[in-house]
Image (cartoon, rainbow, N blue to C red):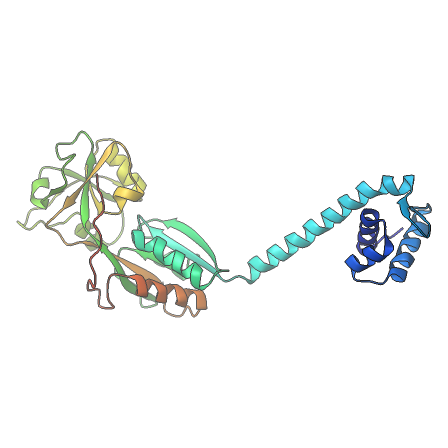
Length: 312
């Protein structure tokens, strides 16, 4: 016996309306066609499902027994159709995988994603936290489409666009002698041990810890880690201090840490990295949106003030 889903739907509607005219109107077919379909169903199952008279239509005992089964089958079929539509829509929606190193581009990251979704409402945006020095490999492998990251010397295939800058802060334990201060000089840190990333271009690591210092001395270095979470864990454990972008005070706030702005060193820069040969429309829209919202111009110069962050 092969009973089609449309016939099950006809049965359920007629069981609800108990009137061939109204049921046919709901189903967008003619009353004679509906009557034929119900009669065929009754022949298939071998029992009468409705008692018909010129004045009324009533379910038989067999009809009442079938009704909950038919409704369940109809609901299951509708759920399968909904699932198929959802999967198809997801497959057809443009995807964008956004990588973020450390705190990314601060508040700009969220603003660009929100504005991109306004321009492409059906875009599927996936966020991914990334290590300090895996960006190029992940971009070239096609596992991310764009990345907000500090600038480092880039391979020719990688496009690097300045997007954000913010002061750098000294990260210390809350019981450190500098804790609670709003601002300080880099010269005051000459006696500190600095925790740093354990790999990557030496000139990049040196820049972050300000090595050499303005007076020609070199900071003392201690344990290393390969992620911002690892660095902050070392600071929290008392293994040393660290220099980070000011957004870290918000994205990685911890009760045992304090963040003090360093007034006399250059700010941290964040670039948007992407493949030069990536022609995806959603990537191009994301880049254009980021450029529109960035406080930096195409030359990396500040074109409007960036609000100060509370680093307490």
